[in-house]
Length: 409
Image (tube, rainbow, N blue to C red):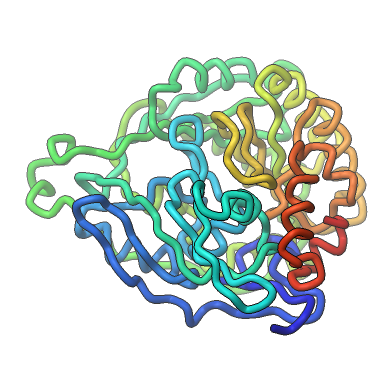
């Protein structure tokens, strides 16, 4: 095997996690769905299988992945490597909480089956390990049964951060919850949000004319951004105006919406990144422990509002107990994700956000990172165990990415 390589799935990591230090190994052809047990709901598939394809095959049969990120254009191997979370982490944990086993090719070319019982240390290092323990070849995943392809959504407007957090805490019994947050709101409006709760609709929830075909999904038309938008599109006055209008337009109440609009709204917009112009964007995501979440979020939002560099795509979620991986991002508390245009001032802003996150005991998400420094490790309590596994299996000089070099993992 070539030295200093890393695997790459569909290339949806925002930074340099899937760019090898010397070689990058594309896993797209490992895309077969090998077996599905309809009695247990266990899917066995190769690592390059796309989430979108899994949904297309199994949703009509009444099954869905138990945890999904905000795009369906990711591979199973990528979801394991990033240990992705969704809008239901507070009740379902992260993706690898639902993985029975992983077949992993390590540096000497052998394939080892890793689980919570066999090679448990390698399993824990691989879940969230950003591809630095080897190449995921195949995996077994426990799927979730659903009656329909529809989500029963409840929309709640929260006028400030305290109200938004109270809304999350009062609705922990809902399976899904997520909030759009106005990151440029200030003073008494700081943290103004719209919270979207969700449950999988039952057949009885559907209108009578849809019950005969509960898994029908409307045709997915993807509208595209035809050109790079000018920088003025993301100026502070424009974003402030958009955020005020968006907040006002969200009508409180209940509605039935499709699975794709609820879980994957940006997938409907081809090349949506062109909103940020030719220089592109940086995504920032952190998680703060529950006891420090409100204070930390106030400090983060105040810094962003003061900088005047807001984001259209600011998302707040409640997380539950920590995940199994040594480098898994989730922990109990609140996670905030934002996009910023690439600009020198925004690199400086993100350094300030790193410091605020660290001061409140939080951590950043490696799958979204493109610019952090080795000091990120202070937020990861088990990084020494991760490094020990890499050393024990001879992986440190085999699986190396630009991210691992930059962060000195």
